[in-house]
Amino acid sequence: MNMTPKNKLFGASGRNEANSACEKVLNEKPSFLATYGRRWVGITALSLVFAGSLSAAAIKTLIVDGQTNPSHDLKAVTAEMKTILESSGLFTVDVATSPAKGRDMSQFKPDFSNYALVVVNYDGDSWVPDTQAAFVKYMQDGGGLLVMHSADNAFGNWNEFNEMIGVGGWGGRNEKSGPYLRFRDGKWTTLQMPGPGGSHGAPRPYVVTTREPTHPIMRGLPAGWLHVSDELYDRLRGPAKNVTVLASSMTDATKGGSGEEEPVLMALTYGQGRVFHTTMGHSPQQMK
Image (cartoon, rainbow, N blue to C red):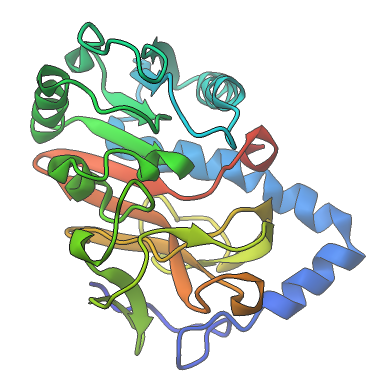
């Protein structure tokens, strides 16, 4: 993993020392939140440069949804993501909705090859082998993938998907699923140890710390900014291959978090394909 450049936000441990200061700003100056909350749109647009060049031709995008756990408003999240992408003027967006949980999935076979980018907003029943194979081929051949929030809970037993996303949570994941990603001595490393695969403390505002400021996705974003109250995923685990952690956030052990810096924005490769993985965005409120 690349060494993280030092700047005044970070102590020797890599822990973000700006949390209390930024949270004070949140309390005193609501305009700070209004300004940096809109960065989500910028992050989303910038993160998608891996899917194709920003030329006059629109990037054909497919959002896959249809199933998730009851804590997520699937339709609202898909609608907000579609709005964000289309309003940029860079994307045309279709939606493929699977059958409901427990229904026959045999005919759910989106033609991934028609798209430069697939956005997974799905956490439910396994896709049939033909659909899985088609998606693996799509990625190996150079497809683009955006995995958002609870989508990294999906497909805990699908090895190829877990390699695509690097680390994930829930879905039966445990120490057999792979290591944690941990920030140690200025760099990201893997740590294999017993423990859960996926958890989060109570939703709260948290500081997002840029770890790769020269990466195209992060270029132009602040060294640290305050995200609105959201779930901060921690203890994600998986193969953790070909991962660049673009940004992280310090969890609060007193609120049920791991007490560690946890990845929140990641870039990965799988075959010739490119992946952007964000754990942020529980609902349209956070996405906005």
